Image 1 (tube, one colour):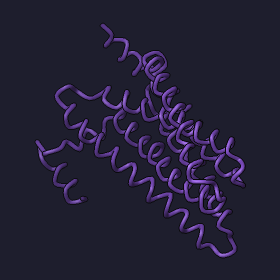
Image 2 (cartoon, rainbow, N blue to C red):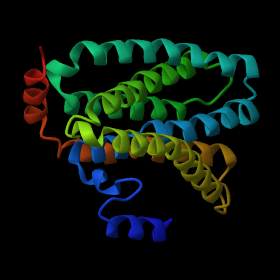
Image 3 (cartoon, helix red, strand yellow):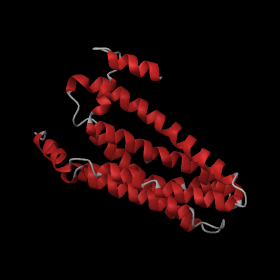
Image 4 (cartoon, helix red, strand yellow):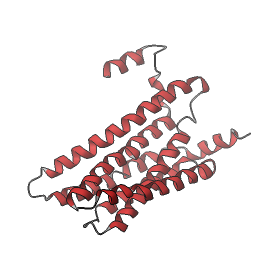
Length: 226
């Protein structure tokens, strides 16, 4: 992989223009996709194990948690479509990151199989926050990309999107495995600490959002209106 990247960067006309990742908006959108939808994928897997194996929540109930997630995701995607051109990407990203972080944090507060309302609230928050970030990322990724480079940029975006799911599952699973192997830590404590650390990681994409030139993006969007 490293050899391919070096070879591509040396060529004037590579098969895939990796230099497009240097575009600030595309780069930020790709990183946020790794750190928000990607992390959620890993957290979702770990949450299934925690709720079913440790707390004894029925598999049907755990699966039903995706219903509040889906409803909240629909609301977030609709909100993005209505407010993106007016607010720009930065506030939507920040709100999405913080809401997902709160949702993951709620998972750490679930201590028994009877706390289904708390679990549903956690999934609703994760659905809203994650989908607000993912839809905003898709809306903003290609703003600074020239029309002639859209094909390469789209390919890079789709590769990054697939990698984000692998990254999230690998990172959160590795974190949980490390915590479970710490001496003196009970399994329930390891899961909860894993959720808390994953929730705290939402601060990283928030910091990335601060570098977005939001006013410039809004101006560009308004200039493109017919």
